[in-house]
Amino acid sequence: MIILGIILLIVGYIVPISVLTYIGWILVVVGLILTILGAVGRGVGGRKTFF
Image 1 (cartoon, rainbow, N blue to C red):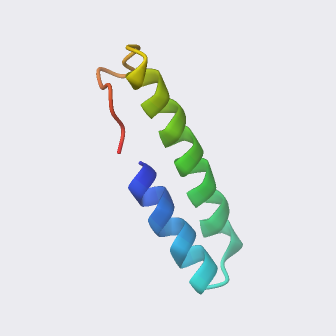
Image 2: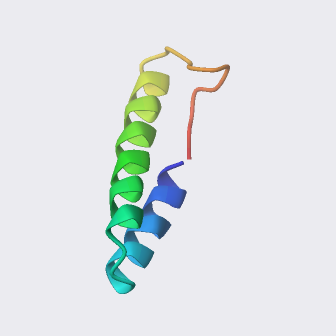
Image 3: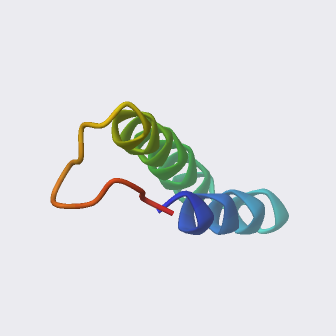
């Protein structure tokens, strides 16, 4: 999820499509939150890591 968000951020900045940039930021933030939850021992959806 984090990797997809970073890819969308890069594409959103290269090609001036603001929707891709917003979706990229949302995916990065959600991915980081899920990764932090997994690191403290609270798995979400059966996973402890979301890439």
